[in-house]
Amino acid sequence: LYAAEGPADVEMFERAADAAVTAAHGHMNVYLIAAPGADVANTVLPQVRDSEGEFARAYSASESSAYLVRPDGYMGFAAAGIDVDGMVAPLRGTFA
Image (cartoon, rainbow, N blue to C red; front, side):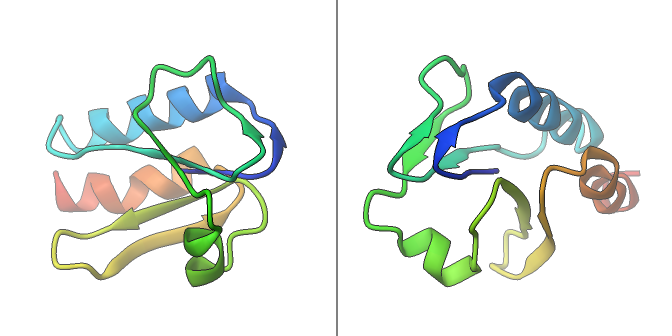
């Protein structure tokens, strides 16, 4: 999950993370990658601060978004915004 600059809807990120982990039956890790100025201090999610903007540049992230990266490094899902249903659909197929 990527949190863009400014105030973040931490509860929404946490709901999305819970939905993803549930869909994967606990067989995945979720991290919140935060832009340098993202306000995510109140989250319980493990965070990685994108202090140099490398993640944002590599994935063209300019707004809050969601990504599923497979263990082999391939992108399984990417979407601007946090579409929980869209994000968990491929997980449900994989972890059925």
